[in-house]
Image (cartoon, rainbow, N blue to C red; front, side, top):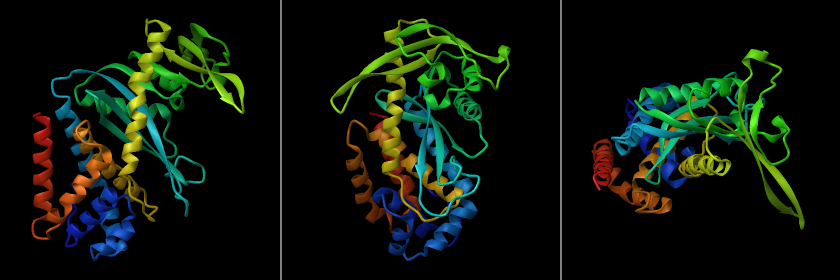
Length: 330
């Protein structure tokens, strides 16, 4: 899984993978394998980008195997934010202080499994439409036709709307932006001050309400969706929840495998997130057979044999390939 080059490659790999499985800190696990935290950081900082790309290829390969024979998919695009406390990292986080950053993914749900198809880290200066375009391009390069795109309200901009209008789409809309506080189903045109009149986007706006109780007082809260689908209002809302809902669960599962680290290096934090993502992708194969925690314990129980210094790398690859092949054939 981790094809670093060097004398300490096995110790570094053990440290990173076990930190993911135990949901522990990289620094703490490094001591268990007789390697210094700085050595682990040096390996990742020097070779991390190449290793990260190969890890992503593994995750995509798992998804492609499960989707073999599927040509058209529903795509869900969203991002997750991870915040840390300590020294800010300039220019790499999504916040002004640099204490948080976003990772965006494109996923699809197939036979109850939420599968990763595309990934991109967001850095300061990257626009929302650039994120969406990059993810869509990755998916289309895999040979899939996009039947429907769903996006969270965080992506609601004129530029994103202009881009996704070439597909069937449903995107959440901040009610405060459209200022429609009643049940509504009709045409709407954006009025962004940053864009010319001919750059505005016209779409079908759906607004609905939910009753909420707070301190024994009932009130209506309004939600909005933009779409170009010619379906009933109820069908559009149900379809949005069906396609987009699972991505929230997938992020929770990814973070369950995400280790802690004191390193503020962008490459280090990106690699451990992608490693957690790959472990989640492996878990999707088992989903329905075992739960997430059972899957974690299964791999942990395998580790005493896998961590034989003489055949660690060979056995890791052999065992994972055999397991993936076994479940894909079922």
